[in-house]
Image 1 (cartoon, one colour):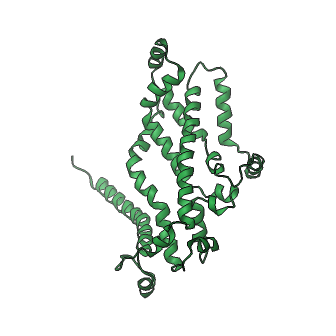
Image 2: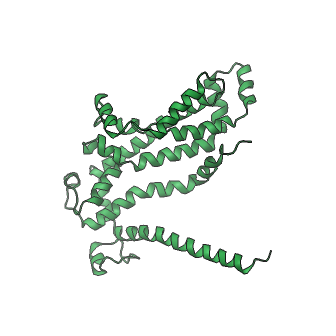
Length: 291
């Protein structure tokens, strides 16, 4: 099929714009990665312009990830919070979505309006803080798991998918004597893997990138997630005292520590996302169009 000059020009313009956007996104991270593996002496000789490392060193990573260091412990806290939080959030989201997808549920519309209301109006930072304090959750290992353990948007997304599953499947299982839990576990969930993967990814990103809740509800650095440690390192013109105390040995130059910390925190999501992107795209579209 022959394309016109206008269509060809439009395609070339798109390629140019997308290439520029790609470079704008990729080059900063490449620079961060290059500095994080370049010895400080070479970094100084090149006046900070290190696009391609000519010498390789892992001294910054060794310093940050040595056993007993603050960021080493914070990484463990983040993994615990992320795994536990995603598991709890999925449990709450799946059960709520499955219940509200049942059209025969009494008061279904009223309950649904209650969930939608929470998307429009929040309790506020101070009331939430007071509630958490009165529950005795401040500076605990559970507060960062519980405070983000539910999203009305994710529940509505999953509910829309559940409503698209044929009722005949659930009715047949019910006639055979299957309980609601068995129907959910054996029939609904296996058919819902795309939307489950999508919601899991959304929760995964929220938990992994959270630092603001940690800033509000924790003051003990032994319970801090890695994102809060990264913020502290980047925001400080010098290394924070907490990092110096836990690291023990004399620290390398601050610029290398900052760049290595960014790589350590960002790399897991950059590795995971390409493998689950297809589930994310499919899950976001499923349930958006009713047949």
